[in-house]
Image (cartoon, rainbow, N blue to C red; front, side, top):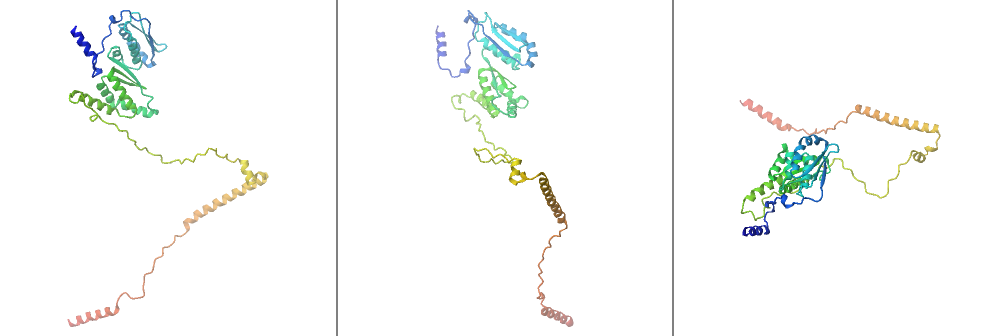
Length: 338
């Protein structure tokens, strides 16, 4: 009696880590009368999944029969159906069976999908197509979640202890409930243009900090990486279109051919006069074009303008003649003395 009282006291007290609590198993003795109503769920599957479901369907039926659940495979409609029986004693197993069928239809292999039937294992199917409007950015961010050769996805699986499958517009995850919460956060942040490495690093740091008893009751914000969104300047278009000022009135309609003829007075001319006028205008255009051609030809024969050089010659002699004569006489005397 004392032991039971001590167990009750420990359970009633505050729990520090709710994830560490073990879920008590639900046994047939807990519900001896079974279920009153029949529950039924149906899930559609794509055509390419038909061959695999045919092969693994005997195993699916065998696993669900252990929980007294009936499974039906309809290849004509392309649906998977699960329903309870009179022998079914677990009321929540039908929800687990429904998730099992959903995972099989989303290309999750049978070995991983069967884990959903366990009490401590759940599943989460995350829709990722609603985060991004453009298809190109959606494909880039989905590939970023997978990583080169699936390295990023493998690291997420190791840290969260969940099986993760990226298929089409959804991400399917199977594993413990704590890991499913982490997987959803990583997937949603990746589709919001936050690189998954930030979340992977924070999970790795938290795992190491949990081992240290000194940091157990302290804040871990200083150790975790901070993501700051940056407004990267985009390339502006070369040709900028200057928008006209907004006016509530519609633009004027262009003049019709008759309106133009009325304005010039051509409308009242006879056919012969109109032809003569058109001929005259045509001849004028031809003469203008002929003049332009002649001017272009004459350009090659026009001599270029010569540069004018300034004449710097002065009338005054640059050499002093008297000094030069005295220098010559002196040189002649020196030769005679020798």
